[in-house]
Length: 251
Length: 255
Image (cartoon, rainbow over all chains, first blue to last red; front, side, top):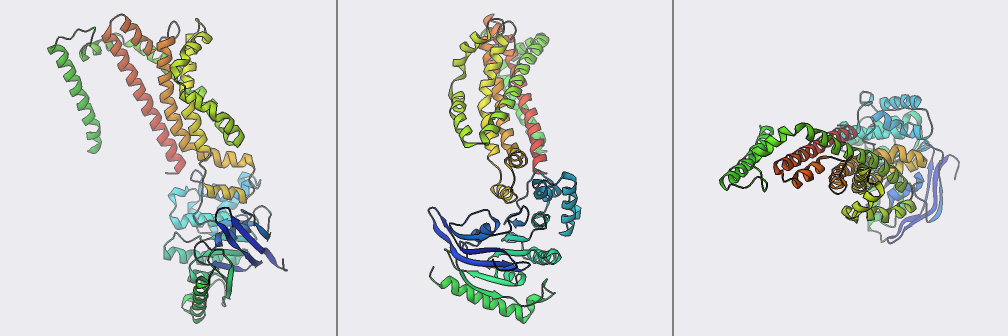
């Protein structure tokens, strides 16, 4: 692992019984504080790569290096994945309570995390009472409550409407600016990848390998109107071309 | 409006059936020891109300005792089964055997074990056997029904087995366990009635015993009155549990 890297995949490969190779070999280093997007077609092993980094799966071959302490790596799944029987606060406090933090300080930190994602008023609400976007925010608050070094997002906005997902993208960047965790997020939306990430990695269809990488210039968090800038448009086009090429290439 | 229709329509329908029954019995001069008229049954119901009430309480008490005992037993067994595949596999054949063995075949055995002085014990035991399987399998299915993504979240944060059980599996089990418990409550009543019929004597004089006693004396109106009381009690019990279940699930879901 190079200096400053908080997680890495080294020649990592994953085989599934009955499906064969789904990922790799892949080499990937995540530097502290950077935001990386993984894009690629469905079934290219993006989510598998994320699960390797989360430690939820082990590679068949190769090495995974990661911040393995409790709460050092946080994941936001595709769905909000909140426990319906717990209030928003209790859901957000869960990672702390599982790590042995006493109930009261855990709840206090959870309320603070909810406030940061703009859900201060919904602290007592149950997941069923939250809108899709609010539930995703609560899920984000839960991921951030342990102040992780690495935040992994698995298509977190896929189920949301365009306005909400743009708003959440800005919110994620604003939250990132506070503590600067390294973020890896999976998406198949090119514009979203360019908007959020400083570095976009394009993957080939299964078995997923890294087809190429595009660096995104520009300040982060993104200034207003970033989507209309020449840089944004140009990068998005370059990324689309690379993605197209990767999908055309034989696996 | 629709609520009134939902209440009124079945009431009128039942009234119509009773009227036909009454009319046919009178028109055809059916003997009361063969089929009593609804009006005779109603009179028997009122005349025997105190005795029927005591008997109904006996039956209800027995069924609820079995329900509580089996509820605890089934929950503990399901928790044990959910904590390890080997335990679950060990329990499975016994649980299934309890389910598929016709409960009637256990009656004579339980009667002997309970002894002539304690028929009530045989009745409770039969009710327990009848109620066990749905309650156990409901609780176990519930314990296995946790959201896999939440399971992954618990993996991610290094939850202990205890934390996973108390904070994820047990709360996740509520809806399916309640479903199993509802079926179990119904079967506890079935088992009680059945137990009273084969073992009922002395200390176990519930409603089923009243039905039999009256039938043996050819007092069919009284027998029907006890049957009506039993049906009414079962209906009330079911409705009460349903209401409780609905409230609990609403709380669990958060709306």
